[in-house]
Image (tube, rainbow, N blue to C red; front, side, top):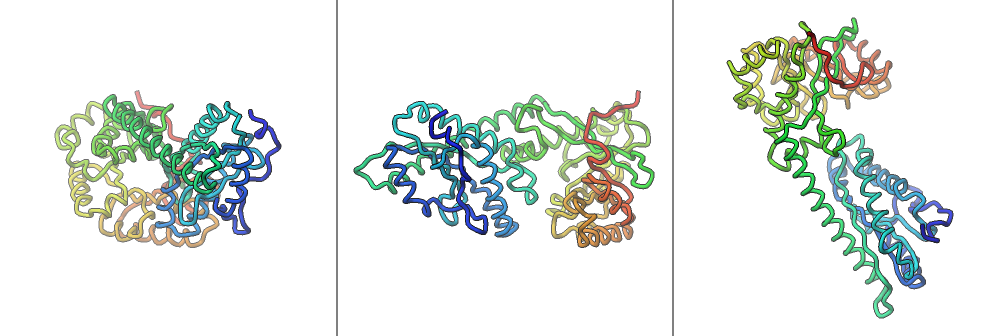
Amino acid sequence: MTAAADKAPRRISPVDSDSRVASYSEHIDAISSGFRELGALALIVIDAAELGDVERRFGVAAHRHAVRELRRLVEEATHGELGEQDLIVRSGAGVDELVVFLFRARGDHGFYREELARIAGNLAQKISQAGNRIVYPYRRDTPDLPVGQAFALYNPGLREARQVRETLERARADAALNASILDRERTKAFEDIVLAEDVTMLYEPILNLTTRDIIGYEGLVRGPWDSDLHTPGALFQMAEKTGLVYELDCLCRRQALRGARGLTPGKLLFLNCLPTAIHDPAFRGDVLRKTLEELRLRPSDVVFEISERESIANFAIFREARDYYRELGFKVALDDTGVAYGSLEAVMELSPDFIKADLSLVRGIDSDRPRQELLRALNSVAGTIHASIIAEGIETSEELSTVHDLGIAYGQGYLFGRPAPLRRAV
């Protein structure tokens, strides 16, 4: 640890009364002075361009929230590493990028050769592990926020501002290179997962909210436990990038059925799938019937869940899949309902057997009257088409009580149990 880092850190990341993260141009005099005095400076860049998506979709307030959360995460990751002169600032107005300026003496070779890379690496790891909180509740995934680093040795023949700007450009190039390397590694890891069928299925119980009896289970995919491709969101995000969505969708269905072999009679198995499942030869006609017989399952035990997002994109494909599988004896659920603007239209157009109210609609519903009215309206529409509502994401007894009082028949969520391997009948 360097002498500068050993000093008691002050409150870093200058902010104004609106908790706005300051721009480095507002501190260019102090940056230039420290650069001249010490003969060197280092900086770490966090490319937060993905936060622009939050602003475009949810507005300025949501974007400010995300920037503040990113700043807090950076402060946590660098706690104990920063000295009194060090700063966490934005690179400029309208630019989604944070910059950490670190001031160490030119002669501190250990810092510039080893410590700087270590600090940047720890920060990148922290963002990878906890970055989802930056965009929550607007997004559920972890945004890609590349991290890069560079340093400059003071040249008295050049303006300090020019040297700082050029160092910033080198750090940006380093961040872009790190992002490219990480993307290549993740692509290879994902392709290996698909080829090796290295996914695990867990099952989350779905309960009758009146009797508290389990009526069925939803199969949920997980990637390797020690991988950043562990979550369903990460897996399908990579599937989109690599053009393997159909392959991953087929793999998840196969594994979910295998894991449910000998499901207790009378319990339902909810399978997430895309409308294009109808084109999978393994999930058509006699082949599908034979598969179910081998697994001691019946078509009436299986509910195909299709996301509202996917169905709204093409009602015709959803209806084709719904009609085909219903003729074989399967049921159909519309998943993630309440996320898109066309929720009620989708319900009326598609007439599913089950409507799964998204957790964003259920979370905190006990203290949110608009959410209660929306769920009440959705339940009323469900009644007209003889469908049943399943409330997702119930985590508190207050949410459960409110949902039940609204007349919702079924629910699932951590209040009832976390996803786990299925205990099968023998």
